[in-house]
Image (cartoon, rainbow, N blue to C red):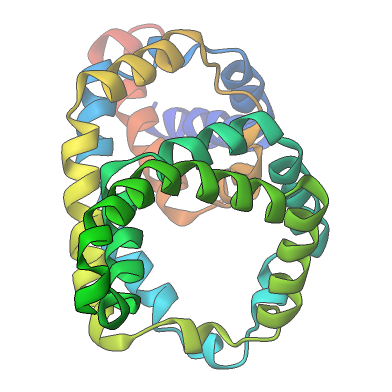
Length: 258
């Protein structure tokens, strides 16, 4: 009886190994909604606990930054497309210029610069009477003049070519030249603080919830097919499967059927 049982176990095990492939599992996984496989709270907790700083630190301090240029990681066509997009936003640009030049901070800054330049001239006793009038006129006209000049110099065409000129000046710069080792830790600390706060916000959780309810696994896990195949052929899988078969076939109820 025992010999017969062992032969059945061996035969059953060989059948499983022959027919156990990742294709069936992955095909089943393709159309599974994520919300049927993972609890939302578990997914949220996993994302909130992510610590990206270690990976970012490795990237920023990697030896490759010494030889890699900006042009090697940024497609020039993407830069051109971005330049065309930004330069085409005439109305938005004009509104932004208007908001800036009419802000109290801008007005105060430029007024101080001009006032300082004219200080010696205005301190002339003969001109003191006209100083207040000049300052009032300066504050009044400053926004209008600045807005007009900026719009003249930041036309769609000039802005596009300005970005092109900037690209040609920076494209050959090594990444290492842009990274200050002394500031990396501080920058990463700020990044981590932002992520911790943002990932706990209702906004982030609402976005995640929508994705969670609508998304499917798709085919992205197909790349693990070779790994699954290796596992099914591994000693660990064979040993575990045989142990399960032995537990089943040596049950008194199973032995009674043999």
